Image (cartoon, rainbow, N blue to C red; front, side):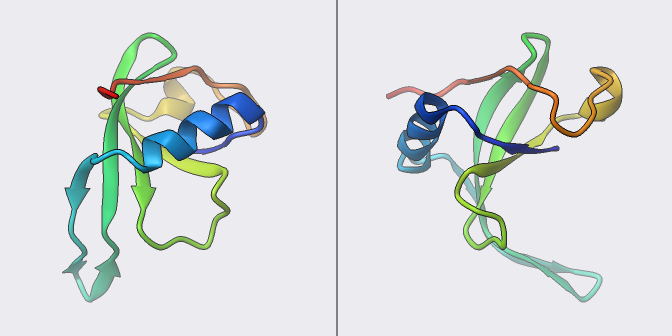
Length: 94
């Protein structure tokens, strides 16, 4: 699930998070497709689902977009539509 950060304070927090040493997953190739390296940070989504924020090393999105991953489909779980707000608590030690 891709999220666009629209609140200035949340965007500032995202830049702080980007500078922290998250779990790094190196780039790899699967079935001939190259997947770039990412940093991951544990997160609690909507106060209910454990997942992670994934920040790719290279992306075609702006710096105000992050990806959430979880063991279940977040769009279905929370009945999300484009433009809906999502609560995300990033669990990192600063």
